[in-house]
Length: 458
Image 1: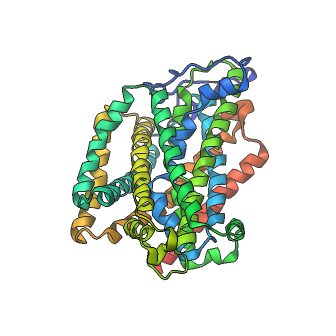
Image 2: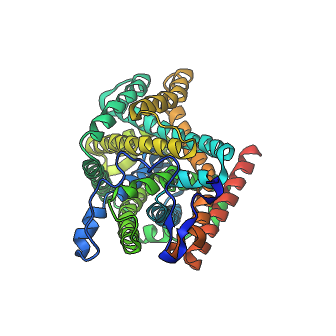
Image 3: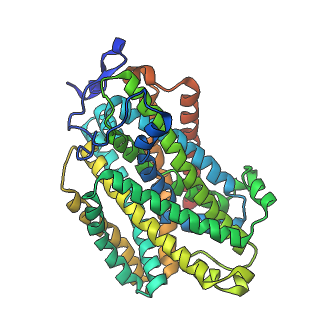
């Protein structure tokens, strides 16, 4: 069987029974382990069994990388970048719908499907790019956790960075309790983060008319400073590694792989689950930007670091009458929860892309240790060179988000191409308007990325 025909349907009249992946099921430790009801079962009971993967995907859309870009964007440009958060979230919903459908219909994750079509050499190149994107995400998690530990307990940043290696054992412990329990833990942490920022934004008291006007795009977004910040928000919101992760974890549900009706049900409920969780992520990201705008826009304060936000939240000279130590502590707790949440998804994604692109399997604990050690090297180097200057870490954090935005088209292009093909997807191929939206988003983001690179080089 050649690489170019791995995904070809063996029986197009039956709706597209597809050849199994060369290297076995994606994330085979959890593949098909969660039982789901038959098609005749009630809507809410069925949704409850399919709900969960969307939460793990949503985690990537509210990781520590979002915090500096969103709060900093609100503090510097007011509510104007809310439109970027909205558009990014809509693009994310479209892409995650496609990637869930790809995994359910073909039985392959995005990495496996891409490798099947491009061959070994190109697969290695794409694996390297994707691994760099995952490392950029891991760097954001390391920085966020280290800063949270520093703010809460006064732990030096260098020590905090080193301590993040210990989250390997947290992940391994969670994997022993079952995938459904992991999903429940992630949902609980997401709700905790959302509750914290709903409270803090309510205390800040943003003007409703200003918030609503911020969701309307305007031409000033193409300015150099706002464009860089906008792309950072896109990179922090639409995460390339989530496309690989989602196409794998939707296969944890035990739907009938040979039934067209079962696949149709799986696509429907996985899409609902994904959109529900991404709506929560959209709310969190909007709250972050609204917090920066309501409390700090126009104050003249430079709030380019998480530490400066922590200090400002309890400084009445900056935040006014609503300032309190409680707001600062809650902010740090939410930051720590966000970093730990992202650790789970980052490790699973690393396994997906390694097995999919280069067909190599290594123990999950070894994978986690290697990627985390690689991620902390630039962070520790940065803290040593700049003497533990938190501003340098936050600058590195923003740079990782911009890199993620640049890496995004590498995963978007094959995703839109595969899911638009009737040869691959059969009757599940994208409708024309879905394909048009997918390609439009891909082209626009690619052009904006090139413009950003040009501005940086200039």
